[in-house]
Amino acid sequence: MAWSPAVRSPAVRQLRFWLTNYRRTWRGSIYSSVLSPLLYLGAMGLGLGTLVDAHGTTRLGGVSYLVFLAPGLLAATAMQTAVGECTYPVFGSVKWNKTYQAAVASPLRPADLFHGHQLFVALRLTMNCAIFLAVAAAFGAVRSPWAIAALPVAILTGVAFATPVEAWSVTRTKDTSLSVIYRFGLIPLFLFSGTFFPVTQLPAWIRPVAYLTPLWHGVALCRALLLGTASLPMALEHVGYLTALAIAGVAWGGRTYRRRLYV
Amino acid sequence: MPGTTALIRARGLTKRFGNFTAVDGIDFELSRGEAFGFLGPNGAGKSSTMRMIGCVSPPTAGTLSIFGLDPVADGPAIRARLGVVPQEDTLDVELTVRENLLVYGRYFGLSRPVIRERSARLLDFVQLADRQDDLVEPLSGGMKRRLTIARSLINEPEALLLDEPTTGLDPQARHAVWDRLFRLKRQGVTLVLTTHYMDEAEQLCDRLVVMDGGRIAAEGSPRELIERYSTPEVLELRFDPGVHENAAEKLAGVPAQRREVLADRVLLYVPDGDAALAGVRSLGLEPLTSLVRRSTLEDVFLRLTGRRLED
Image (cartoon, rainbow over all chains, first blue to last red; front, side, top):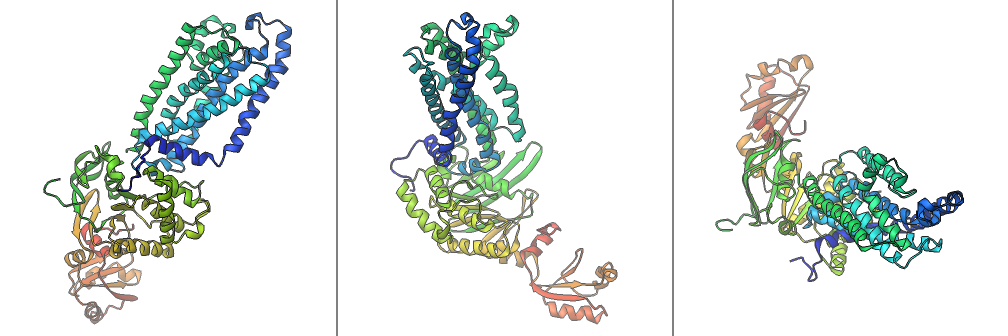
């Protein structure tokens, strides 16, 4: 038989496909992973931050705007990375290149393709979040050694977006419907989930909506870890919420992948 | 599997999409080493059948067994032993020729040295060795097809499924693909192909089924089908448009097994074309052009369905 003695897990075979693909674009992607936190922390944290700090920062918890902002942007970076990797690349694999159709003609099953891509997304999240943390530390925005725990939390935040978004992307038949997720998901979450200002600044009636969004959970826990104010119960609550979402996305994606590729 | 030596066997195989029945309860069987074809026009249900054999489309009803295994339960195990050349190119155009084979070989769990050795051999075989480090994107349609064939052979499959392998290729590229497929056939690889080109079916298939509207209309070797459903020769006549309309009536005097009046030609199915042409002339009819030829699968299809294959 044509099987090598060390048969790799099917999902890992698909991960290696994405890594082969990534070899073409990794330089540019690292460049933007470094540049983006530099720009945001510079413009918003330092530039806008000076104005904010001049008015007093008690509502930010008594820390400078830069220190307040950095953990929010860390979680938001994870979200953006996840949504970016799980929309057009997934859609393109079904509709443009049809590499998914090629892959399911091999022993791989649709769920293997899904899991393999999620492994790749987890790697991309690890890279981008680690780079972000390093840049934030260089800006002096890290106040606690617990910041190191913010890395897995940020990755988890990304995964909580990645699995359901990918489960949905594979069902799309037109690329225009992907832009919906940016317009009505990504951008509002980015702006109103506590990234740039505390959710308590929002009108009371809309706050519960913010508390339901996965980004808020990621932002809240990353912030507590970078400031060194996290407690175990609040950490468990946020991690539990994000984990539940990630698992629901895995279950959903297993179904949507199968329905899309086994026609 | 008791009581079967068939490599692939289908009984009452059916595929429905909502209210539309793409494959309507077909039976077929094929054994190792055969070159087996599904011949039919677009929409006959050929691709749906192929996708069911390729274990990427669960049958709606009926039974299907491949290598004695069930495609729904044992899909990965069956696919590990199949090669698939899909109708549309599914190559990764952003990767090089060789990277495409590397990625695909890994899907089958093959080690890098094995893939490297086979890639070199396969790229030689499909005459792409000199393009191995080029990106796929700029390759011609014929080269992409040949690369797809090389990719489908990376796991040394026991059966190769080809869905319309030369559709969209120019005649020269098509002949290059046929040549490679013919070599594979000579090497004993089981070929299963769909086509709406009767010359492709005649050249490559030992045995075929004629499909129309999701059903099998006839089965046999190309020669058997022609003997059963057509005459040894066909006389093709073209007349002036004015004469063409009444041609059938006038030609009733010429003995023929069957007459077909097409939009531009009249076909007479006869044992001896030259004798029939003499008969036409003796009636005082002078065609603009006349052609005596042997019957083809196109004639079989016309007889069975009343339509032409490539319409």
